[in-house]
View 1 (spheres, rainbow, N blue to C red):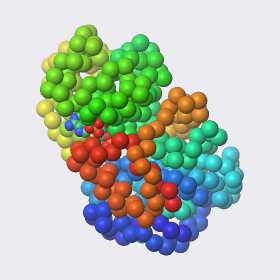
View 2 (view 1 turned 60 degrees about the vertical axis):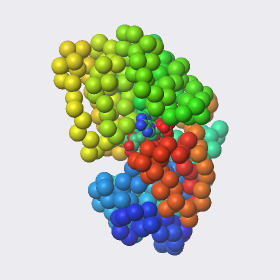
View 3 (view 1 turned 45 degrees about the vertical axis):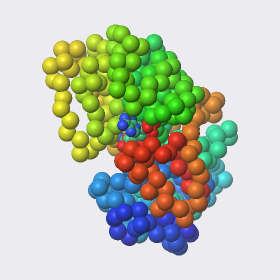
Length: 330
Ligand SMILES: NC(=O)c1ccc[n+]([C@@H]2O[C@H](COP(=O)([O-])OP(=O)(O)OC[C@H]3O[C@@H](n4cnc5c(N)ncnc54)[C@H](OP(=O)(O)O)[C@@H]3O)[C@@H](O)[C@H]2O)c1
């Protein structure tokens, strides 16, 4: 099969495109013909070696996939050749990735793709929608009528948080960089969008939510806790999920006196059953068009190194060049 893989960690140039042997599914595995896979920032950290993972070289990069079942191991129940599936959590914790024509995936990480949903959309929604679901439902337990502030609402995770928070009945204030991204976030359901370049960003949020926001979702790698705690309502909850090396100052007094709570998580450590439950909701929302994805562009598998460069520059370099997910079609 054709694959995008690495034999050492390093800059995007270490990604090779070429032939690897077809994977053979284990007893609880499903062989998937990959029709679409999507790039996430974690793919670039694993490739760079900045997030240490066991890497079975040659290591196929990538976490998300959507495609069609080709074969199943003898212990797999519920999935059969010909079925359309999507999933995430590959290319992590010693598992091979998805940027290939074929992927052998443990059945616990795969979900049926609704007829109404394209492979491109299913792959693009995978990791980011599960992340948003885990944070909003499992951690912050957002309630109808509450107000959420999404710092980074225009990003992959941010757009999923904006939409799922709306679906769950919350009022959404979100940030974006520039008029086009702001329009995108508005189209995806935010009630108010504030440009993160503005010096008075926090004041605008405060004006829109004078009693504070119930949930503050931080997508940035260097959270500003003074600003966040200042904007939180009494008993507010904050979600953090980025910035492994960040060691920002923390306003202990204001935080506990307000009775706030702080949640942190990485989606790929969540139990497969919890993720599968999230996928049920995600499938329902995607099939009815309530949960959508923004796709910046489609690329062929041989452009994986270029896709990593683009993702890195946009997320880590904060160039903001991407407006939506990068989707690869093997
Ligand atoms: N813990 C987990 O399970 C988990 C899961 C997924 C992702 N993550 C991490 O979460 C982070 C976001 O992921 P993603 O896929 O959403 O990335 P992304 O698509 O690149 O989104 C980045 C967001 O940051 C915004 N941004 C850039 N510069 C900013 C600034 N100076 N001030 C405020 N906002 C700014 C961007 O806005 P504009 O482009 O509009 O400027 C965009 O909304 C990454 O670090 C990723 O590794 C963690």
